[in-house]
Length: 94
Image 1 (cartoon, rainbow, N blue to C red):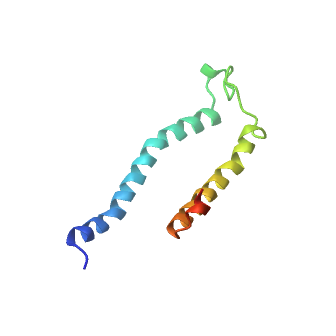
Image 2: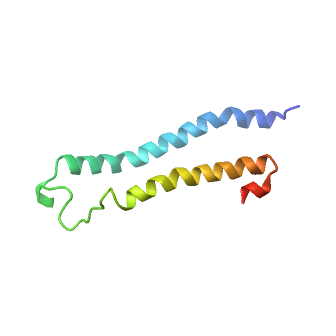
Image 3: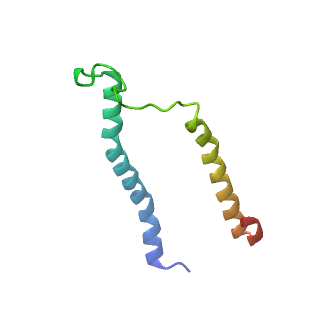
């Protein structure tokens, strides 16, 4: 038998998740807009070039390329450990 309060909480979850997602979009949108606007239409104040003088740019074939396989592999390891713990195989989770 489910308790009525649990049913009420379950009904609210999708709405709360959408509110959180919407607030994140509203928070991040101005930053992406400003970045896109500055890169697509550089102004006189930044000498009309993008990126502005004095800003160092990373080569995408160095550190970012090395970080790319690290992110999915770490996610896979955490998922594997999580499933091992749920299955009662703690030795595989280490």
